[in-house]
Length: 112
Image (cartoon, rainbow, N blue to C red):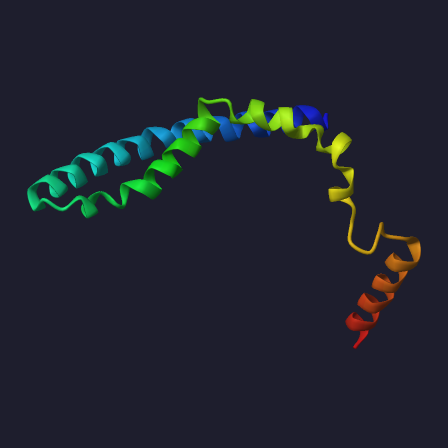
């Protein structure tokens, strides 16, 4: 059941990204045309500078919606097998004693 929910959430995220790309792609294209025209008229290529971050956002969103980003992430999901030490909690796993200390502190806080 959790896997089905996760798959539906992922599908919704991809669909949202594809829909977002329609609007952002239109904005990106208009901005590119306007900034290019401005750079030519003013003879100043620095006018094109805003296109750099916009192109990164567009590329990233395109890769999520239509590209291979999700497949590349799945390939790298072997972190559980190869680098499990990166997943360890600081100060180790929670113990029953730790949870009791937290519960007591919270109950003392609520009674005060």
